[in-house]
Amino acid sequence: MSTPSDGARTAARIVHPDRAHVWHPYTQHWQAPAPVPIVRAEGSWLYPATGRPILDAISSWWVTTHGHCRPELVQAIATQAGTLDQVIFAGFTHEPAALLAEELVQVLPAGLSRIFFSDNGSTAVEVAIKISLQAFANLGTPRRLVAALEHAYHGDTFGAMAAGARGVFTHMYEPLLFEVARLPDPSEGATLAALDALIATRGADLAAVIVEPLILGAGGMRVWDEDVLRGIRLRTQAAGVHLIADEVMTGFGRTGPLFACERAGVSPDLLCLSKGITGGVLPLGATAATESLFEAFRSEDRRKTFFHGHSYTANPIACAAARASLRLFDSRSVTDRRRIEQANARQLDTLRGVPGVRAVRQLGTVAAVELEAPSGYLSDIGRELAAFAIAQGVLIRPLGNVAYCLPPYCTSDDELDRVYTVLHRFLSGERAAPIGSGGPIDD
Image (cartoon, rainbow, N blue to C red; front, top):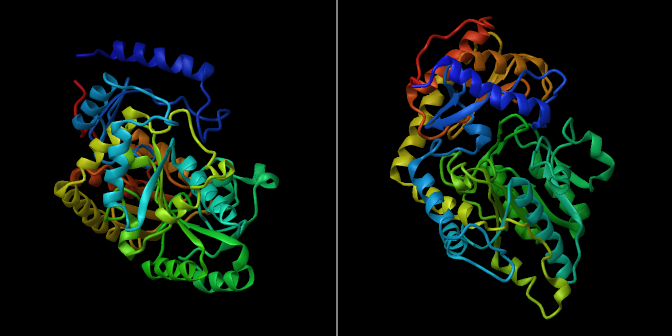
């Protein structure tokens, strides 16, 4: 058993060099508190070097699907690491990547038959956009325009930023971002009418429409209608325009079925994956494409090659983890996801009409609570809620004035109760009161 002094020494050993040398993402270091040093994780819980366990209500940035340190994933990683750790993927292949591609094709929406591996969600999106644009060029019918939704977020590399909504994340780089035709957020506006108008006026130059299917994640967990997604698919097909589905967040069960496109019965031309693909244990990205897109690059002309790759493309250890994760999407996983969906729905009902709540919304295992406060990522209420929640042993990271619960699928109903208790107490005016011990005991 560790002692408090052991924990304090461990915390100091981590935090001191961190504060001296590490640059954290999405962090204003001038005012940020010291980061919380985490020494282990299990199930839905994170264990700091000192203090109470922390319930991970956001799947550690939406990646952890089955729970932290799931034994099946740990074993797959260990086994693969002792056999083949890394090999260049240009001119070589290996079993974990080849079988993962085959297994993904078996569960993806129909028509997606080719898998291009990369490193993360942003690169998966970059790959999709580049495939779309170059496919038209390779076929001698170049198109340059990409359309995307208002309030979209597709990543932080330049192509992904360009496709995302303009705002605080992108304004410093605005002059360097390529033109994107912006369609209304389907939760607010007439998206299909705007797409009809765009195709009528600029259809000859429109290469692709990229969407986060059915829920705009970082834009505030904005839920939109399946009929609109079907309408976008019908219009893009008729116009010969590629539909890119960014399922980096929605993939692997977050919206109910394995992929959000399944809810609408839609098969896109390109589909982007990352986050939950390995169960959240290792970085990996994948872009699925149709066979016709793949064929657009097969040519005697080497200039028509898809000149894109990453040093760790299809890393064997990450691919082994992804295969092990796919095997865990069984009937038990379906039951757990339905249970979480139902529990979230019950909890959201208790928040409807509560003072301080502007709206609640849900899709699958994703639940969101929009607070009565200034909107936008920099809204102070988000920081206040995050600080209050972490003091109570719950990790919530609001998107400005939108709090959300996006838990690992092993999260119990009692654990979800803790998340919503924190929200209720915050809304009632508390800012620093303890919530009680509870949770696993770190012995």
